[in-house]
Image 1 (cartoon, one colour):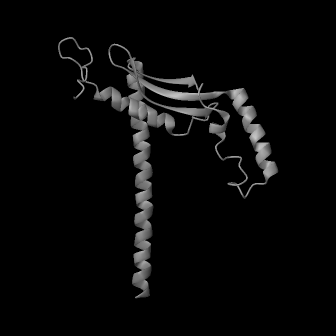
Image 2 (cartoon, one colour; image 1 turned 90 degrees about the horizontal axis):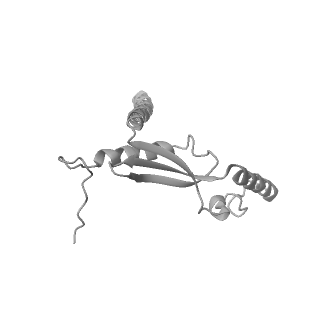
Image 3 (cartoon, rainbow, N blue to C red; image 1 turned 135 degrees about the horizontal axis):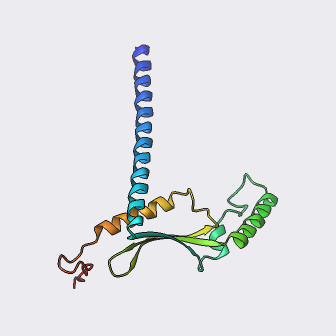
Length: 159
């Protein structure tokens, strides 16, 4: 009986590791597909990715509870204060930014998605850039054009 239990545990472990590896492979393939599709559409001049200054976010928004000793018991208040000063220096030096994905509808640029509140280039490697590119690609592909004049079709609002 113990041997069966150990065998079942072993099979379960192998299965779970295989699933994790499959998920990693699938995510890697998805990233590659987004990257390749984006590059193709960008070369055609129909999508673009912009980094723009964030003029709305306030320091309190950016900090959240990062430096609040009430929520960070494992860090001394002195270290939190020091980290806060470093963070403020980074905000002042590198600025606060938003990333925007846009697509061309044949008449004007349309914003598909955006995320704001990044200090410096913290958005790089965050995954948000890939999400925005993916959503921009989907929005671009979802468009419908007039078969005669090839202008974007206008959605008729429902009453």
